[in-house]
Image 1 (tube, rainbow, N blue to C red):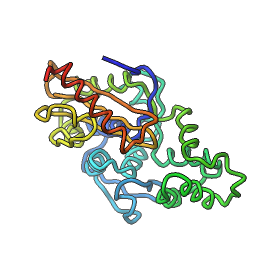
Image 2 (tube, helix red, strand yellow):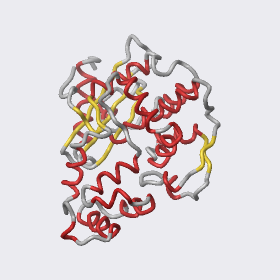
Image 3 (cartoon, rainbow, N blue to C red):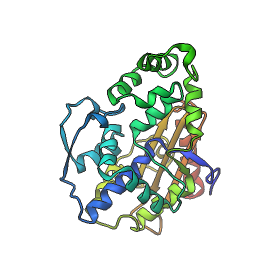
Image 4 (cartoon, one colour):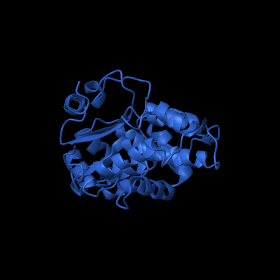
Length: 288
């Protein structure tokens, strides 16, 4: 089944699954171990998650960063991992895993810079601590004002005074986007062992993708509770996604599901819509 699956959708935190794959493939290949440690740098800091508030130089194992990135959707953890594997390696691996050259992922700090630069171009040069401070302002007029103050610009010099418009302009650039078909292909290759063979790295990935945790959230709220589901959500302004594989341990039963919404309130409206998608899949595909 598909509806709008061949159009491009903004991934938000669903991009963290390709990040995890890039890291864990290097572990699988013996270039790194899950116990290798990375030190937090100021350039890694960005809002969402708790690592951002820790001291520069605080060390974390790759295992911990993958878990924090996926289980808690920690953006600073994601930035640390991207810095380690490099953006180029991330994109090369993602394009291979998705089977398309038409995907470009960035760091999560770069997302903030690119969005805020739609308000004023000087935002591209803001340091990470300033980006975190701006994000503490409520999204809307207060966020625009925080950006204006950070770049020391006159209100008349702003390209837009609407965060809705700033995000819409950013989304049109097609960064951190792909089709649902391509994302689903990556998940299919994952469960088939084609992008990450069976072993400790894949076991960690499944665990961090909540294999044994029922969240009752979005798609999973409509799916049967007694079926394992590895999955990741993605949320940004007026965008919400949820993707995963039901019964990932059984190739005969495994079912890849990828769904996104646009132009709905990402917190209040998207959840019930995605739950209804999960419920429809339960009834049509599973007969329950």
